[in-house]
Image 1: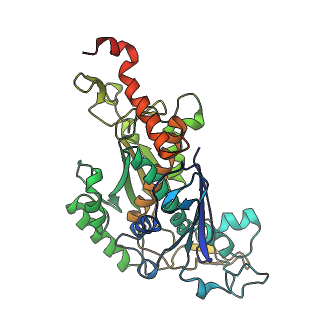
Image 2: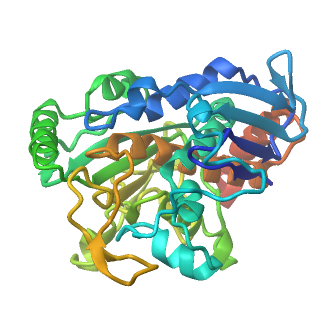
Image 3: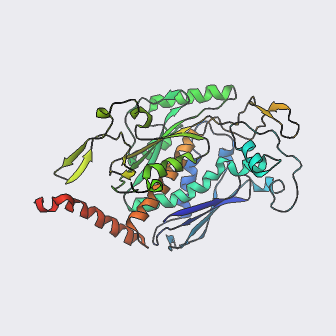
Length: 394
């Protein structure tokens, strides 16, 4: 079973993540983690923090000489801005001289203040901040490394940013990841990329923000991850929950999702075929997103993630109430982006990778990577023997 826990605040001393359940013998370096975190900072429309933010990685435990030990892995991501925030975010007893009392609509501020009895929105926003996803990406680097041992690849690309949407039906393959990341908005469609950049510039000019949609693709996922027997073991349910947990995400669909609701049953499903040469079942379409009955089918896994426009604007116009005076005002402004959809796609990859890695470990088991791979290979080798196929084999 794969579990992880993150801790830390946006302007605190740093973030920490502990990942439990990784098998021994998995190759992992600080440079690999830093590389994934650098991808999280990609995207036209990001704020100034992305230009000077450097993720300083320390592997605290669970790794020796570049390989996991089977014990929990602990990773620290230091905050390079901490010297500016040592007094404001100090864990020592004290009080702030500048409490934030105008909660921002669209954020966790007001509900969190009411839930926990806080008078200062910073007690909420520091943890609710999307900065927390850096720790998730660090954990996701471990998950991706594990999936690579099982020949599974996860990548994302932006298919919509604001009203600009890609009309390209082609999906990037694992070998296209560098092409996607080289796009200023991580879009695989050059024509749509130009439209997206134009929308970002227009929104930035008036101090507004944009949301959008990223599509996550998982190649090489074997049949049988997840389960139909328990509601919390269904693969699509786990993916939906993991993706919906990303800050500012308001919609998730698996496969063709909402479009399927408008189709007739005769055209909404993925027909099953038999490939006699490869002795395997095949699907020519991915309408179900590679998942049926809560289980992976062996086809391409597809999930789309919708992010709302960021609620912190460079032109504060959102009406709110000062929690101390109860007077109408406008929400305060923290540093913000015009859009974070390209980065959200990278975080969405992380969440999909963590779910798939967890289910792969549950399905195949193994205390070492070598044992995990052997168990996977034995399962796949036994598939043609099912349903009397071995008797008809040449």
